[in-house]
Image (cartoon, rainbow, N blue to C red; front, side, top):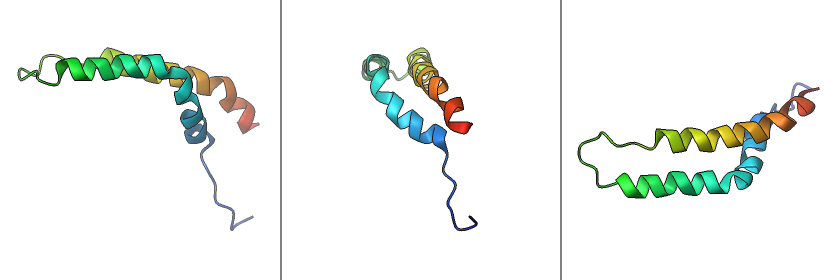
Length: 69
């Protein structure tokens, strides 16, 4: 038992859940491309970034606690 490597099930579930959030990822990428030439530093894609991770987290939450039991 001491030789077993402990893995984080959340990281594995996040990787699997990213495929379900492709539309949010594309929205974020479109935003990044749209503002890449902004020299003022005022434009950002924080909203799209958080929308993407909210989607990933929602999908992870559905399965994470079942794995921890």
